[in-house]
Image (cartoon, rainbow, N blue to C red; front, side, top):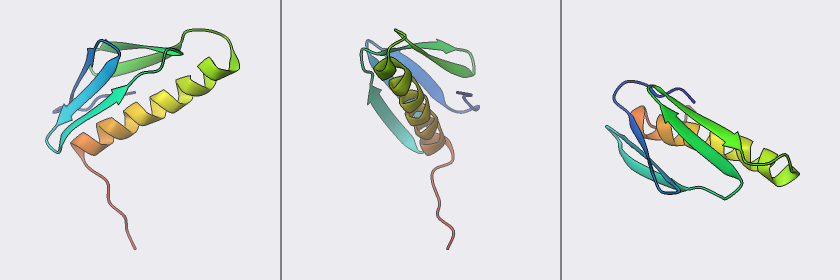
Length: 79
């Protein structure tokens, strides 16, 4: 997941914290995935090859991406 300028993503134990101009969001991780934080990027990897690990891999990646978008640009709905 790419992290834009102005957003800070940290890992506190098993909790991912995203901070930006629109506030702060937290996500508690499941035991099925691991998260690595590098400069300007967050990597999510499954811990195993079972079905639950693979599904939580995609779900967690999507949730972290939404967190980053929410604290940086926010969400809008065009009608």
